[in-house]
Length: 184
Image: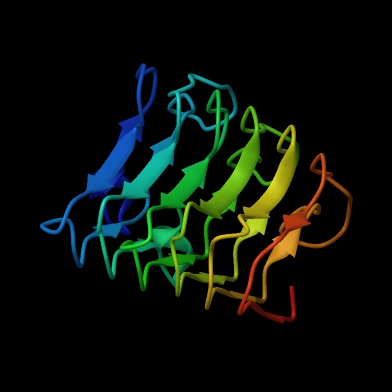
């Protein structure tokens, strides 16, 4: 869904439910990259979905974002959570290199209505790496108590992408088992 070229970008906004919903055993190995989810075309104003991206019901091994700047999703301005991974059988998903809760310029908050990113209700082995998660109303990251084997690495939480100014979240909440945190 999307791609690294600007011409491949989807603007996924204004939906009553999730902007992108990957659900079920057939939602495996998808790549969601280069999209604006919950914003206008310029990425500087909110046009909220309920949730930005929802991964649930045994959706496994999906990649949200990527390494190159063009694969970054802007996931901001949504009414509820920016990215949510749920259910005990949703495993091995990767959230990488996204801007969650800030504008496309990376200069100010364009927060999601609750958390920037949440892994809960038993989701496990989620890799959360090299994201900027800032400006969200309730918190940057929520890892629910029934999750396990999740890894946070190299994320910027509560700052702009250049790490020159604070763009705070409400909090960072971590209540998980088997969590690996490195460089966040």
